[in-house]
Image (tube, rainbow, N blue to C red; front, side, top):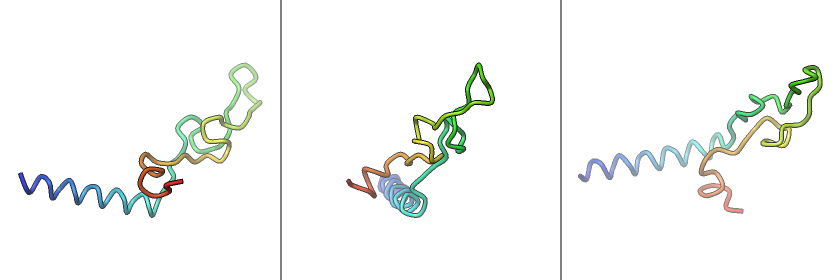
Length: 69
């Protein structure tokens, strides 16, 4: 049982350090391009709503563990 708790603590510390080093992930909706392409007019595009057009999205836990704002 104590080994299981130690492994969980190691996992949490590792995830925290990973969030500090790489806080953003590629946006899944626009695939990191920042553009959402039209379905009717396929040459037209707009900024992605999910990431705001920058192609990046905060990873799970970033605001909770690292940013705190």
